[in-house]
Amino acid sequence: MLSENVAALLNQQVNKEFYSAYLYLDFSNYFEARGLDGFANWYKIQAQEERDHAMLFYQYLQNNGAKVTLEAIAKPDKALNSDMDVLKAGLEHELYVTSLINELYAAAYAEKDFRTMQFLDWFVKEQGEEETNANNLISKMELFGSDPKSLYMLNSELAGRAYSAPSLSL
Ligand code: FEO
Image (tube, rainbow, N blue to C red; front, side, top):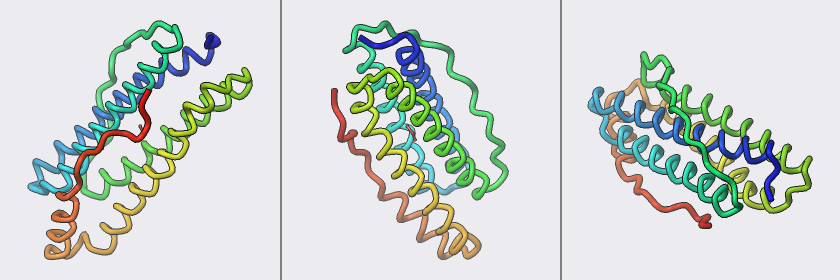
């Protein structure tokens, strides 16, 4: 049985993950308009992963007898004025999501809700990977972004990202 507080935070996370998908779709849209189809692909796949995250929280709530309430998804509100703006907004967003997961974990810990803690373990690890990916993109852009040939190569590398389903299933 989930406590009211943990269930409310898990429900909020469904919305936050769908928002993440929406935000990354906006990033993809930005790069599509720039003609950088590899970057657009990378963020489109990122959006797909975020929808998977949302569905994991959704399913976890349902599996534990809690009703899911779907709220409105906010409009992506990051100012995207340059390629680097987008990449930095991505890192900033992932740091925010990490803080939400930590908050959730702390709430589950306070309730001795070991099942939810175990479920969240996957997300704790995932957030580490997401932050690393966002940092790596920024580093590569800092190194190569100002040279058109290098940017072309980086774009080609990101075009190779393929979707894979999350390693966690419920
Ligand atoms: Fe679902 Fe990128 O955190």
